[in-house]
Length: 348
Length: 262
Ligand SMILES: [Zn+2]
Image (cartoon, rainbow over all chains, first blue to last red; front, side, top):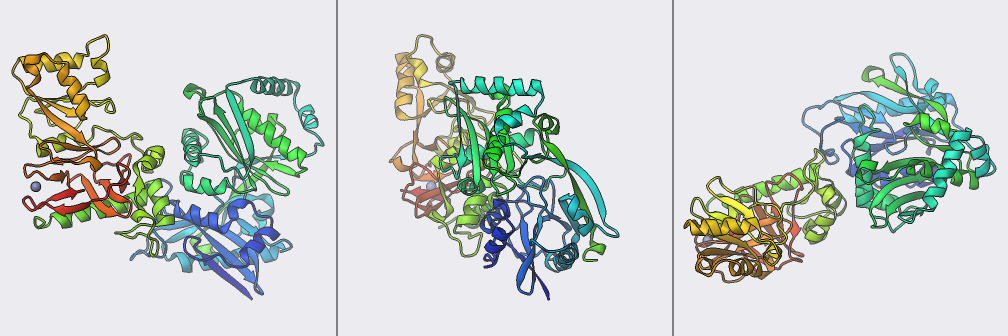
């Protein structure tokens, strides 16, 4: 017996079995129900959480963004106020702040047929929830393993920008450095010495920080995103300070900050810790023309790799963008796909 | 008695401002969606603290989050509204030179009517070595028998007047700033706030009138909360000014438009 429930984390209480599923499936902290509720309130295209249960146990979960526009400078209408006439909208299965990962997760041990059935069950439930204006569904950032599960007749599979991953084959940071080209290795060492000797730079990092100015961090991230690195047709909203304020205090979220002597935020990096695959999440820096410093990006990469190696994590995921630079740091690319499902074939 | 319809129009404009801020401005979205607000409530069951109002200090600290998603200016204009409160408080004759003397107002007002000229004068420059150009402008205007209105805190106006030749000093019309928590008996005065700008002034009736087409005020448990109804960015809605001032908003018995009683 398969049951689907679609929750609006803005108003629906957290299902009692959700935290257990999160732990068992080792989901990244962005899947926290309360955080999804915060994100939903502060989004133009807010996520719903769709759960599939079999015999009363969760077997699949989807973060489904309800999208009305890529550009409209407005937040989503409040929950449950249905328009009188159907307005066009589409759904994206996507975790907005987890680059390179899909917005769908399955219980460990569920086979490909079970996964396909669970995804189709959500696809059949969504039109009931979202109404006749629903145009279709887009699965973003799907790995090659899930393509056969989600592809099918009438569905469009497209390869998109790959994600960068560093497989941790290293016992020490030195081993990692030794695996890089001579010029990159020398460059990193020189930069590390220069940064360490720079008395005008204050670098602080660690998990669960409560000493941060979320407004300044949100501003820097949004400025950076607006400047470059923005995806075409990005359904996401600028990062909200209230979200970061809660998020950065979590013990599994590491924040690295670079300030100048006057306390001005120069750059910030957030990393989501995970037993296997920590994720480099946000990187944002002031441009040099605005008072930013060179080479901080490399420093943040070195620190993220150092953490991964020291704590024996299997790999470091670093999202999309700057792939050429990441390659010189030992990252490989993992193919990522999107699957578009027009309304008539949803559930089929 | 409210002049017929003023209160309804005023409240409707305020409700539109609240709805728009909730739909487009990050800080209000966060505050009212997660905490709540009153009058109007935007999320059923959530009423927030101080009716959802925020302090002026917080507004300044988080001003980047007062810019709507569509973008806009990220710094408040402390000279905003001067052109609209002057006719209310001390209607200037055409051709009057309006000189703003306030160290907190560095840029000239942009909303004066075409018939007036405006300039700013930093009172600190009056005691410095070089004579500020704006002072010469004031002297020239007075020598030509023109009208000059000085706007600013008492001590700044006094410094300006003291810097003028004795025969001209008495011809300057004074229009002092008053913070919302320092409203006095007049006879002249403007309600000024360093973040929201000019909010109102003493009318002919001797009461402190709000510039109601542009400024809304309501009582909250944190004090009077003020809203700029027409400024799109930074959006200033329900701001507790001057540390939160107890007071009331009522119709002027003579004019039927809103006055503040503190
Ligand atoms: Zn009156």
